[in-house]
Amino acid sequence: MKVKTLVGNGIVAALYIAVSFIIQPFGFTNIQFRVSEIFNHLVVFNKKYMIGIVLGVFLTNLFFSPMRAYDLVFGVGQSIIALLITIIISKFIKNIWGRMIVNTIVFTITMFLIAIELHLAFDLPFTITWVTTAIGEFVVMAIGAPIMYYLNKRVNFEQQL
Image 1 (tube, one colour):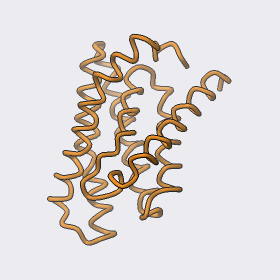
Image 2 (cartoon, helix red, strand yellow):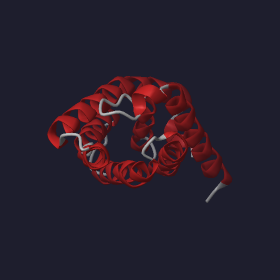
Image 3 (cartoon, one colour):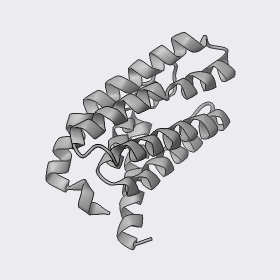
């Protein structure tokens, strides 16, 4: 792995952790607004960002999650699955907006894994928990898409790694 890729992913992981720390009270409940999830959109620009995103999710869940063991399995697993699905589907979609829409939908749907986690950990009702976590994820990802799009215009994420 190139040093540039390693450093870039380290920065992404650090940003994910920092943003998660700031919004900690809203990031680990059945109504999740984990603003750091906007970094998931980086994968539509360059699949190499997956490493930094997953590392950020892993370390955030390791250090800040009140349900550490569950989050290390379900939270990290959900991120890996959703990112891989987006990477695979993105091969067939050339438009960045199309990729971000697909990414938003994939992350929203795969929140069923987080609903399973919260059901197992706290006996919360699965369906309602899936709906509330999916809504939170959708809102963050939908608001994050134009932010990441315009940041890309300045930073050029495709070329950074």
